[in-house]
Length: 519
Image (cartoon, rainbow, N blue to C red; front, side):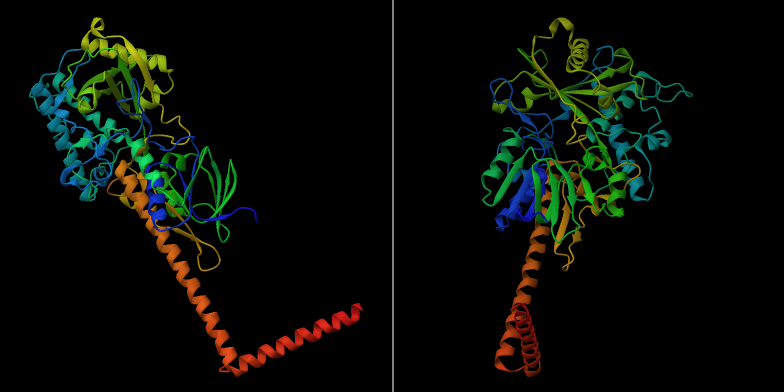
């Protein structure tokens, strides 16, 4: 079948961080790799832009290096130029009327949310399950007024407590999922990296390009959509937009959002095992969108990390979801990349249900909304000329179908572990292997770039181990054949030799009879 198609040692589906990391591991071992990517660019959910004079990298997708304590994060060894650590204490919080929330209120609210997540994590480790929203509704400590200003029969109703509820919404901005679906075990994983967050000054794309430059035995096919992954034969057969591709092993780094999509997910033949289908169904895949606003002059305090504000939904086209408002966080890129030159760029983050809702609007409408919010915060007369505006729509992007994974109330860490177990195929002693990688496949570092990196390296090692075992089996078979031949020639197996001579004599006589009949 498909005799003209070469058979690669390994095909990697996806040229994001996980896919390129896997290819690097395989390439170093001399394994022939083909990386196929549906987009016309590398990166996947890494999408680096260089606006203006090109001195500053702006990430429309993955941005942070999470956890820099002890220099343990592997990205720190690959990226020499990083920003100053992000200091979230340097964030100004604005109320819906544009007034600045007092710092003492901000500090108390921030501490309350930290204590809340600690209680949720502890409850999860003691066997409780459920969503963050459900936990918050029943948690006595959370529903207590920490300011002593709520009426006895109306908890969380005073202005300061409303700020506390607003702070809890930031959990959605971090985890990209709604509080109603986020598991209380979201922070219960062990072994993650700790400490502050930084950003790569030259951008994640620069890192990927640097890795690719060092590859010798790896080919890339961009603009190559995979429609079918058939692993019913001795090798995998991929039906793609650029024809048939074959490989002994396949590493899939398809995002969880794509695997969840009935419309965009490639067809697996046969269907994936039930254990994987359950994991795909139960794990959450959220959305966090960004809007990048570049101004001719900065009009915000230059030494602040960012500014938090409320997007009042009903004010803008009557958003009628359960969340009548959402936290907007404007990240001051100038403060973060001060060592890399001056820039007048704010990056606005918004997530979960509100991000899904805002994807229906054209870029011009989102721009209007955000400029309106900046006018409330800083005064419309002080907002300077907008030079450029870019907004992301990651849910709409068919090769991503969202931003990154989270632990949903229906899932558990074992769901991520299921992706690390390879699928073996082929009639000859499981000669083929299908394995998965990506940020959703790692328990301790999910939803991070370093998680994608580590998962790709793990998948690469799995393929190497499989290929080496096949070569070892092949070597044993060759050795057996050589030994058998030697035994035949030396006469140590006379019975076997006699059988062979009898068979050969019979075949020869049969051929002579056929020739005589023909002639």
